[in-house]
Amino acid sequence: MTVLVTGVAGFIGMHVATALLDRGETVLGIDNLNDYYDPALKQARLDLLLPRPGFKFRRLNIASAEAVNDAFASDPSIDRVVHLAAQAGVRYSLSNPQAYIEANLVGHFNILEACRHRSSLRHLVYASSSSVYGGNTKLPFTVEDRVENPISLYAATKLADESMSHCYSHLYGFPSTGLRLFTVYGPWGRPDMSAYIFTRAILRGEPITVFNHGDMRRDFTYIDDIVAGVLAALDHPPARDAGSAPHRRYNLGNNRSEPLMRFIEQIERATNHKAIIKMADMQPGDVKETYADIEAARCDLGFSPKTSIDQGIPRFVAWFRQHHAL
Image 1 (tube, rainbow, N blue to C red):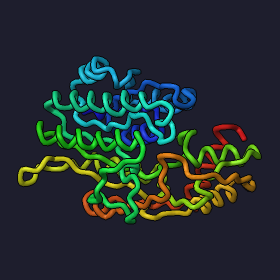
Image 2: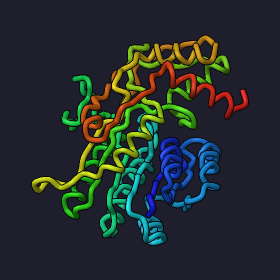
Image 3: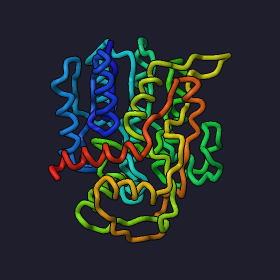
């Protein structure tokens, strides 16, 4: 049987596909390799997957229903879907909101529609985001928290994805699981994320901009822990209990909220360079602190993150130096 992985040339998608192949799965990956950030990085990730036995790839945009349906039709053995394709980033949503509507709403809808017409579908796992918690101040964030007040369009689209998925699971009976991911970093990470931005600037001797004057905390989660959580979720589809929809939501985070300045200190230590810091006010749509309560994922999925930033940041910096020949 085949696992369809959307966004397979993305940071998390490449790592998830690799882990699935490592355990003997057949993977059909789809991605449009857009230019939100350097497509060469996406191609480099994809190049690691293309030679692997059991891996197939189709380049397409999930905002096209016809393309999504053709991908599903191309492999009748698809029985599980890991849907990671999305327009990411809070700040980019301020300048290009249309991209979020097309990828995160229309694209997610197209995946749901294709899933409901696949009678053999065993499970849809999709990526949500810690951004759905918006301006919540009660910490840590739990999946039972109310989330009616997103403060960025990105968060609003992810919240809508959760609602649509619940509706489709209720109406059509297929199991789906939404994973609220908390600030993922690690080798092959995205250039628009803090670990990449800070490491690049620090190694170049360029200043880094630190928002809210450094008074921020994040639940930084290493990629290997996220991948373990995604696969655990995939292997535990929710059941329909007492008439409820077979749909679940989980936080996947490191279960600790690290001060942003300590995160920067770890990059300084790993690079052996001192950061030139430029303090700035809070960015619109950003939040001061994130912190994941992972008890539900721990109980239901056996999720147990193992990597602190003291371990993860040196691994990322080592990859960064090797990838950029520094």
